[in-house]
Image (cartoon, rainbow, N blue to C red):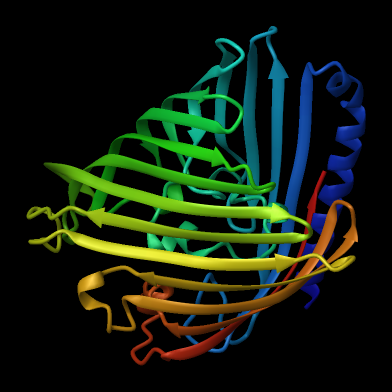
Length: 369
């Protein structure tokens, strides 16, 4: 308990420091030369069984995050962007940084390490304050392998009128060190996203997709992580629905993923592996309170849909409380069936009889300035 209090004090101390920095840069922000924003969260997590997201039956407060987003104006058309973040287990690092250039009033280009334009949440997934729930929807989970963090390359945004935004991009996948590949190495990627703001106030429709070139990795005891030279294409696509108006926040997304067969991969794959995930989420503001519910489903191998190691159904219920305009408290309960997202942790811990039905409890404080 003492260690938890120390961690909480450190996080809220960082909030005070960040607030001071924001005040010091306010005059620059007014002139739009420099912007500085901060966000973060401190979470408690406990699972009744099947260790999940680092939580077990003992519960842990060891889940915190601090992010700083900065931008600097170079000239009337050019701006630099960067995000610096740190977590409980990871030292500070730049997760993305790029140059944005406004070609004309409808077209802009980005060069550098850029957040993936994929689905509703992917570019802001690290900022818990921008979504109603504590845990991200299953389609963005690293354990589900449905999307990427960022890429090194070039992207172009093109506004086709006031209601349609087309985005295309290409480059090489950026993989966080803690997610280093051992079975398949992601190489190059091309993709895009189309967003349509419908005539209905607050309603958006979106389709995103990308194709990645992947290379098999030798995963033997002697040569772990050595590329074999065999390459193939990996596909991902997501359909998104978003409605935010009149105190309602309703979202639904469906994600499809195809992993290619690579004979030199260890273990060898003789057929493509197809996986899918989707969720439906509803939140409603009642004064300072925001009750919410979500249903998640993921199947990491549709040919083995009845195996609980390959699927997971999650019923999420929770409530948020707005402590201040930029500080929010939340509590949520997950009712899980199957353990696809926790399979890696279960294997690593040597759990031989995972529970089919189990629960996860989360409590969180988050802020954004």
